[in-house]
Each structure stands twice: as C-alpha cells, then as structure tokens.
Length: 91
Image 1 (cartoon, rainbow, N blue to C red):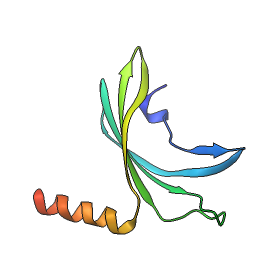
Image 2: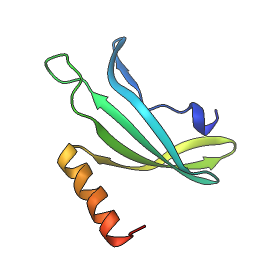
Image 3: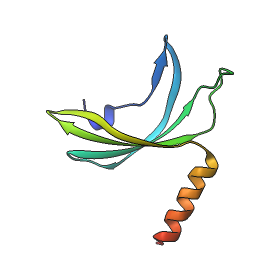
C-alpha cells in the first residue's frame, strides 16, 4: 500500500465513526509524516468539530506502519498551535 492510500477512517459494526476530511503528506521516505483533518462521531450520532492528527509512519519491507501520533482535538488548540508556529517561524 502506498502512503497516499492510507486512511484513518474507522468503522464500528459497519458504521463510519471517524471520517477523514482531508490529508496532507508532510514528508515521504523511510520515515513519513502525514497530517489528517478528521471528525469523530459523537454520542448523538453526529460528526463533531474538525480535529487534526499528525501520524509518523515507518516503512519496513514495503509496508507503512504507524509509529506515533498526536491529536489536536479542539479548534482553540489548533489555532493556538498555528499562532505559536507563526510567531516562532515568521514568513
């Protein structure tokens, strides 16, 4: 499977419970990093706010395996990270 084909979508008993909205490949190689934009289904049966997940994959024997992940789980947290990165590393 190629990196572009990997998805974080998840089903529970045939029902989509984690919906991938978009993804962006930050780096490719033996160690690859992918940023996903996603929503999770809440207890009310509706998909919630947008979240971001960064996943680090290691490629071994032609297969990508998730090695680590980090989730940004609220719009406030996402904006805080963006603002701090912009402050640290201006254009």
